[in-house]
Length: 281
Image (cartoon, rainbow, N blue to C red; front, side, top):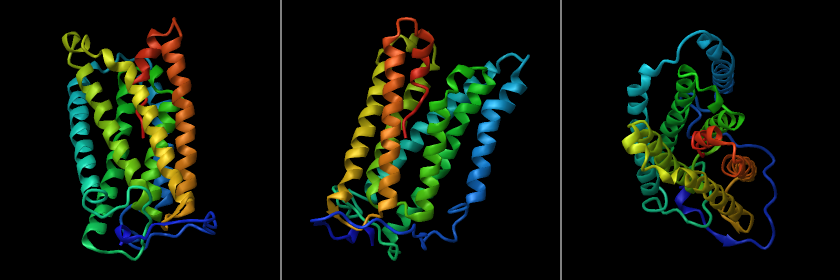
């Protein structure tokens, strides 16, 4: 069981994993470890939002009539991510016996709590794929300026993380990052929802600029927490650690750059409007 991992102080760094171990608990699950699905999904997403979609919308008016659909979508995402925060906490740190400092993976664990955690990770991946819809909405409303490199890469990497976890072990140390990410999505989608309710509500959304700061704090917390397996031996795979650390550094650098550009450039009101569109992980 992942929750039974022993935590001991390590005098020397663990030897790097020679290979990735396919998680036998999810090997027969739909889409788990399916590389063709992942590659096809990413190619289709990039093509639709950067090529096919803008080409389709050329000469057409923005589909502003989909605003009620977007409001419903944002509300649904708030509720789903609230559920993820509570559910992941109850199956890890508040009910699964997880160690907050360092939690390994036991690929042989098939108890009820562990398997329900893995099932939750599968649904988490499905919702992160559904996040692609917000980019589709940008295309249909001809808000191409919001479809930045950071926006597209962020969506792709978050889905990759979910897919990678299901294939090679989604539980363990990464749980805190997933919980933080879900909470950030609650805040972000709440902002999106409120911003669509009209001027009477929008004037109270003065806290927009702090959303990116909130995202940066998230990346720092994930980075520091992910470093723990280097100092404490708990059986968490090194490849997972390397991926999480590199992404935390990448996103922190990109979001700092974006924040400075959005809130330091006196000519950037349109950029500022885009700042909150690039959600965290």
